Each structure stands twice: as C-alpha cells, then as structure tokens.
Image (tube, one colour):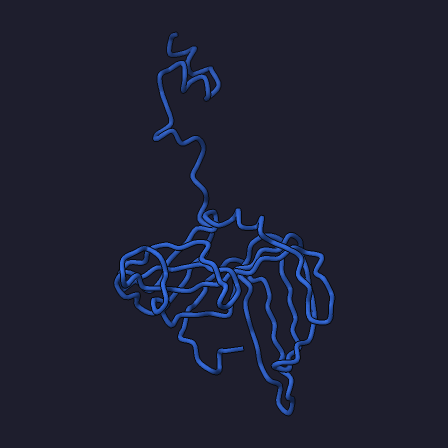
Length: 201
C-alpha cells in the first residue's frame, strides 16, 4: 500500500493497514477532568480520601484514593464513581411524600491506614467532615419538608445528574425552627473540617 492510499483511508483502517496502533491499546481521548476538588488540613502519612454512602454506622466506602503526606487537597475524578448512579432510588420524605427523582447522596471522609491493611478500621477515621454532599438526581427536582428533631424546615433543589449539594442551615432570630437548604452548585470545591457542635446539623 502506498503512502497516498494510506492517508485516504479512514482512521481505523490507517491504524491496521499502515502498521500503527493506539498507545497502550487506548482508543479515543481520555476522560475530561470532572472539576471536583476536596480541600482538607495537611494529611498525615498513610491517608486516604474516601467517598461513602450517606448513612452513619452503615456507611460503605464506594471510592477512595491515596493522599500524599502533607497534601491539603485532592482532585478526584467523577468518572471513577459515575456508575454509582445505578444505586439511586426514590426517597420517602418526612410527611410521606415520595420523590419523583431517583436520588443518591454520598459524603467525603478521610482515614489513616495505621495498620497497613488498605482498609479503614475502627479508630482510623480522621476528624474531617463536611455537610456538603455529592448528589445524583435522575431529573431536576425540588422538595420541601419538615422534621421534628430538631425542628427544621428543609428545602432541596437538585439538578439532573451529578452535582455538589451545598448545605446551609441557620436559626432565624426569635424562632425555634431551623431552616436548612441543600442545593446543587455544580461540582466545585468541598472543604473538609473538624466536626464541632455548631456543624452537627
């Protein structure tokens, strides 16, 4: 096959007929960066950034990455956990309403592998948290509902797909009922901080 004929062939045939191959067998461009950044206090040796299901004692680590000693941020790639959207489900809210959108909430945490087994064990979780969540919604959605303990009026507003659910809570002057909002704000920046009573809502 002469060079002119080779140049006229489609790319797939060029790779086969002209003896060229994609580096490492990769076809197509690599995934684009997802724009996610997680910031935290300097990481001790052996630290991992972890993404967990949004329960308490039953939380499951669904993604993690090693963090360099002394690092203060990481840039995880959304593509590494995007398929978890398959776990999204409609939720029943206080008051009995069921969301039309299927939802999945995930939360960030950090742990230190003190025993070197590569898994988070009791006593290895670091005091790093945020109430902002990684959220998946199968469609745009809004919801309003009230909880009794503590007394709180809540508002959710999420866009379709993956996003950062920014958390905001405050107590209006002269009221005994908190206002809590959780809204999609794109991917953006998550900032992990120490857990304190004032951030426990």
